[in-house]
Image (cartoon, rainbow, N blue to C red; front, side, top):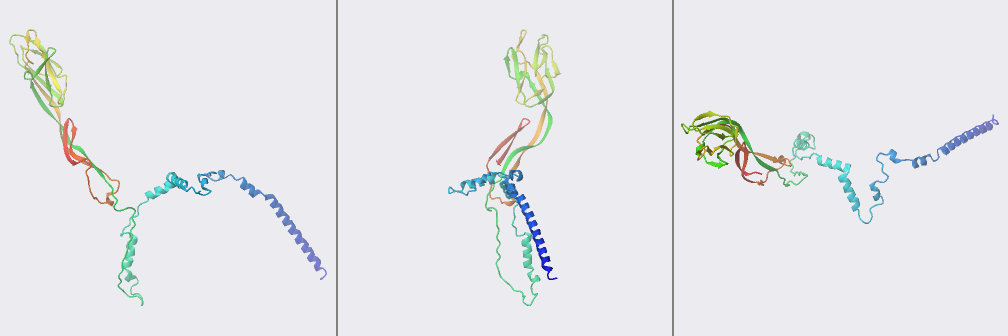
Length: 336
């Protein structure tokens, strides 16, 4: 048995050496196959195809070498511009501006809870052990408040007054009567013309004329035109009748006319012939009262401030509104 053992060991060693050589060769072949794949992958990588928003030459590249001795003004300016116009800067600014204010109040829940613990300290740990005993102490408490703005900042509200009317409108009738021979007349192109200025504005709902005969035997016919309507007149006859005028309305301050010829045949008139005219006019009656309406504009909450003073920016005086031809005035010591 001793002579056979070395031979067997030699065979085993030879087999192990053969296995190691084959593994090395396989690894070496694989290494040769993949050699250069890593560097080729890096060299052939196209970042613009794989990285969203990739820019090979961003604006920041001009600062990769550092800021020269000329100063960092350009870097500061670019930073300020990006903050003001870039989406990131806008988002941060909007978040800061729209952030709700932290209102510091002694009544805040966390402060009240702390004070409650202080007030109940004796019931929590007081006299609960041999080393615990009630003691009276004197101490000062300091509270710090941080304010976002100066409490003395002055802000202004504006108030403007305007005049309004309140009330209602009704209708009533007015009767106007005139004697033409008693009114001033002027001669225009062979006609006596009487002009009558209306004191009211409204619709003529009834018109009436009348005259007495002038001559018992002599017939003197002519036409009187009043409110654009021709009326047949004759000195031998009297008249008392209603008529429908061509002009249907009157306007306050505006004149209407009545006219007839100065001469008819051998008869010459010295003035407008005698004729009574009666008009019934439907007019609007307004009952209005002026009052003041104030409008206010404040750029802040008045609850967070206190009124310190007021001043008038638009001097007082009388103002007038016109409605339906009628004027309404009102005095105010200050209008703004």
